[in-house]
Image 1 (cartoon, rainbow, N blue to C red):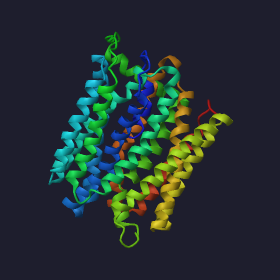
Image 2 (image 1 turned 180 degrees about the vertical axis):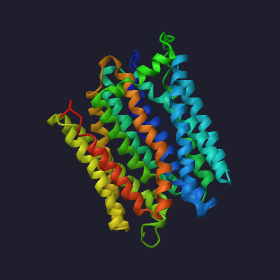
Image 3 (image 1 turned 120 degrees about the horizontal axis):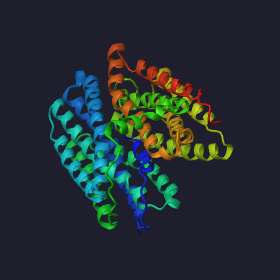
Image 4 (image 1 turned 60 degrees about the vertical axis):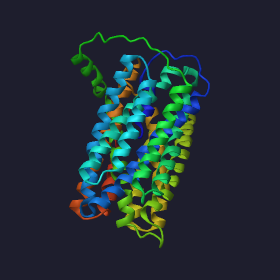
Length: 414
């Protein structure tokens, strides 16, 4: 999942090891290669493969495949994190997850039915989340507290870098899907080999839990009793749901709804739109974070950016053209990037108890991961019931605007 790694890197409290040479750069490479798989496969290769297998039912099939695979991603991430915590090591899980993902991607490349595509993508989501859980734990394990901000910034840069690279590679491989899967898998496996061999593992003391499981689950969800945290959670969930409901169907939107210039196919169009969106996202992430700190005002940035992301959903409805999509991608990237950056700061300021910060930030992952599970089903149902993508843009915009309104009841942040 796209924001989960940022939250989890702050959610594991361990004593960091001394600085290791090249670790920051290797972390950037590891996270970027992971996101290149998520974006390249999820946004280009899987939709292309499904459209070739079942063009008449591609919308519904993509919804089922995307939704079920997201369940695997959400389940395997915390399971793998807990297992790597229990063993006290990260490198074996990083390397094992990446190599298993490469095998899963090879299987995907040979799939010729929608069922096999679904099984393959579930396997890749599961194994990539084993890799992701261990990689994100490297920051609190090995990075000194004084350098955590720099590390988080590098992890944040992995999204525009990895996402853009993954989509551009995938867009060149739509005629050779098997090769495209293998190339993206090999990049992630290579990054895992470099990280696990060049930076030594840091053995961690393993302490068995002393609290019964039922009490741990109740404590985990106790943050939702906090008024401000609950509204921040709702706002994040609505924003993420609105964003991913549209982004997940971008290839089909470009092929079936947008009038593209002659000679430009949907996969090539995504390869242009993604860098535009990611660049805008990177700029607004930095600018929004800095200005909200300087002015000590958070809610206005969060609300305005969510509202912007909602309003611009109308652009492809009013102007279903290539120019309209370029404008939409840039403005939506600005809105989503600023929202995610400043909203994370809002959440840290409304945590119920400082001593439970890691646990409560883990609760926020539900607002990131849950909507990504629901989004494919929502999008598929909207497109099928209302007969097109106009309704999908309008629903996505409405969800983002509701996310903007959810910020207003928060009282503990300006």
